[in-house]
Length: 142
Image (cartoon, rainbow, N blue to C red; front, side, top):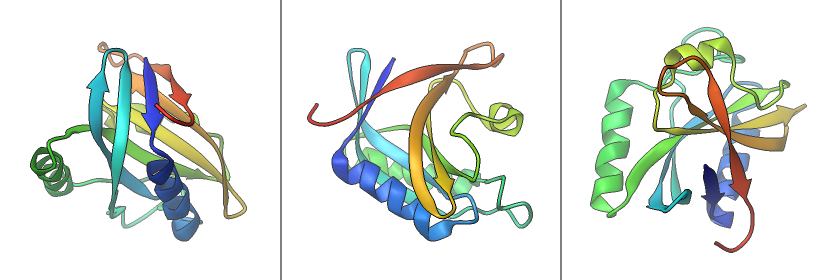
């Protein structure tokens, strides 16, 4: 399991995380699957619709997911997953993240330390929902 983020997609995720700090940001990943590699070509910023605990939680409504699916389809791409940030915490999924995730999707998490994005790691929920498998995040040209 590998995830390639275009340089523009990664820069957009990091900028979004910086802008939303100290709250969690979230967004959708659009791209293609090529063998074992997911190629993320575009990201869509989504609103964190949580009304409380925004520093440690995010919520994406079904309406936002449908919008992202439509945008992907219209662009001839797939909805590959959702990114979010962890302000002042490591980029490791929480129990809350596991309870709200779905198998198939990729879940990149960027750590934001004192307002500056640092480590970015990506995860996929196991089919039995028991935990995650880490994806290798590829850098540079595909």
